[in-house]
Length: 390
Image (tube, rainbow, N blue to C red; front, side):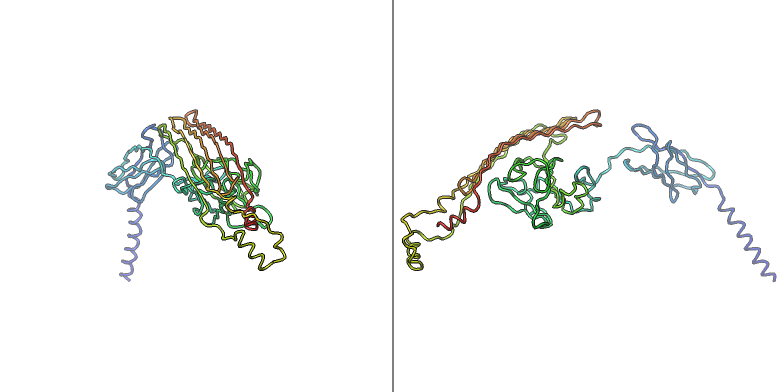
């Protein structure tokens, strides 16, 4: 019985002493967090000592109470500022005043992707978006801009026409219609172009013939149906966004020239019968038609094919100041095809100018592009007719 009383007494003493220990006063830390440059208070900064943490108020003030006595480190963090730390020594029952200044630090953001009428971080884009920059473009003789991304984008097929000035087709997700157009919507610097997919500016057999490939900075392909939420039904076959080059900030004025010369010819022609061989075949297999034969001996393939010479010259001047940037370019293209009367010629001028006003609160952008094209072509059926006459 006596042992039971001793046990109950010991339990009561323990329960009574424990709250007293928990209520023993600790130390406190208070102060303000401010911007090192402007001295303005920073609201929402995270202040931490050990397992105790709090956020600063609207006036930048903070209070950490009941901090165990001893030495520790006070740490302060805030987005857009470099982390700060300061050693502290806390005494029982005392308040330590400590002000912290944070130094602004540029936060590294994810790459931005232009997706129509706005921009999104690349990590937030859930649709199928592929961006090809000028460093990744195909090189060599490029007549139309779509040839720049041939075999560069997964799931996108670029069907080349092989005819100067001819239309190079793009198929995104394959053919989507048997009777309507399968062409995507082209958007150049925010301006939709006229194709079978929708209204806009129409420029001959290929809607991109007016555009100099050397002026293009990047091509973005929107491959999924989500692009219809931005561009409507015109984007049913996908969207191809083309961004032209501008002057870069910090760039000194520079002059660029690129040029190329090319030649194309037919390396192997179909083996056809000459006049004597053809007469012998008619005499053997259709003797009743011999009277229709005459004495001409014409090399019809030789009459329509030729060596296709081409040349292209590009001249560009670009630069940037503290509040503006510019790029002016001129282009001349003369490309002849391997078939007579099949050629394209283009003379183009372009100007891109940007101006920032009111301490970068207002931006003005000026894009001007003019092109004179002379496009001559022979119907591709001439090859079949040549084989029949040959």
